[in-house]
Image (cartoon, rainbow, N blue to C red; front, side, top):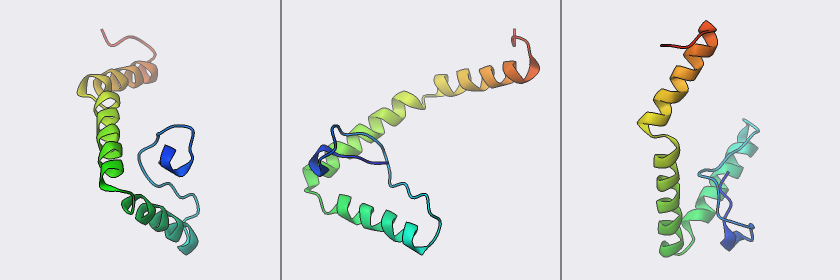
Length: 82
């Protein structure tokens, strides 16, 4: 869930608009939050998009993805890969 300091959150965090109720009200909430974000000044949006993209590159690099697959494989097989 996207939380921003400019919206009174303690820090900038998250990367999207989460809704837990899969009904028209939940969808409306997600759309409303998205429009609120896009109504922010361009410099706020740009700063957040850069942060989100940087965090995604750090978290979902090819190396870290491969490492996680190897861990799952080893856990499922009950022994190390090598």
